[in-house]
Image (tube, rainbow, N blue to C red; front, side):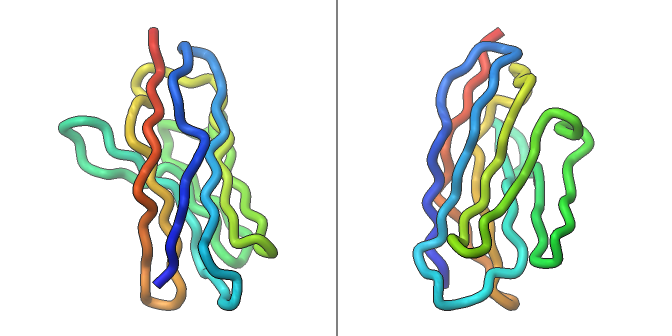
Length: 115
């Protein structure tokens, strides 16, 4: 199993930007998909953005045009650039990665957007 460590969360005003990072603990394997999910209080966890090993990128409709996912395969690291943040983006953001059929989650990083 892979250990994932997120960083970059924090408090920001509406319209501001944050960049999240997620690094995998090991580099002696190939990660398939790397993704960001989020979970707001009282809501289900939802996919925000996914970067596949083939180079495809998938976004939730709510973040299209504002968020950008990227990955550095040499470092097994995935990033989420978040621009134009809105109060409804407030949530705990989780990193996810899978190696074959085995998926791993990070512990999450809090993003709070004030109005």
